[in-house]
Image 1 (cartoon, helix red, strand yellow):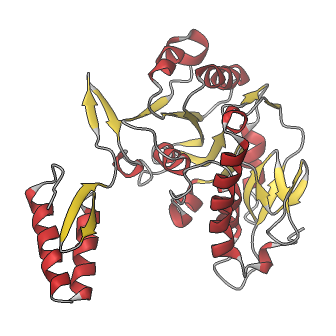
Image 2 (cartoon, helix red, strand yellow; image 1 turned 90 degrees about the vertical axis):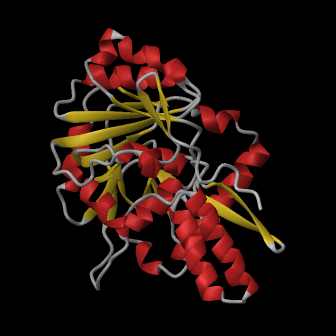
Length: 318
């Protein structure tokens, strides 16, 4: 048995599970596995023995700053009433200059009633200086620091948990605001028949092949800039954290937001033309080797197929 520093109560659960497996009491073994995982640990069977390891990196307190090892560790504000009209969430990873450009554009856009949340997805301490700049400090961003690099969906979940805006806007750091844009996105969401909105959409006839469009209704909204209601995230989220790589998560989440929970038609994904947003090179796409990028993208796309393979009603909502 290897406990890897696990608390004694978790080790006791693992021992009890080992005994249940030896007695072929599979329901009890499954129940105990669930209790171990709920405590933040993973158990790996090794013959008649086991090994325990942390399910997530630990949370760390460092120089008065909390760094979180998982999205679930981030104190959530989703149970609070909405306090502002929108929350803009950015994930900062390896390119602080892109984050600086995006935040500078937000500050220059003069958006009123907008909360800004930045997830400093470790190791990203080099972004700290950005928040001391005069043009960015006016935004008073809520910074979520992680203790280890989280997958893309987990990092977004960590940021969204801090949201107090009625609408949530996911903004990729590769996008530079050139003027106010949040209001137009929120106006699109005033229509109860619209689930998700943004300036770049994806149209498909079969949920297999997609093409980008810049106006009209689509099947999905790209995550360069993707807006949805906070209430819908509470109702339908969180994002699936199996999406470690960013690609195709935007399709999956758009379809989750759009799918009907009754006999009514699915809601729309609406593309808003003419927003003052400029796309720059997407660094993660450009720096990931093509074969690895394709492999990770396919793996993510299989998750879409698994969930929506029979959801033909989500096609052709125009």
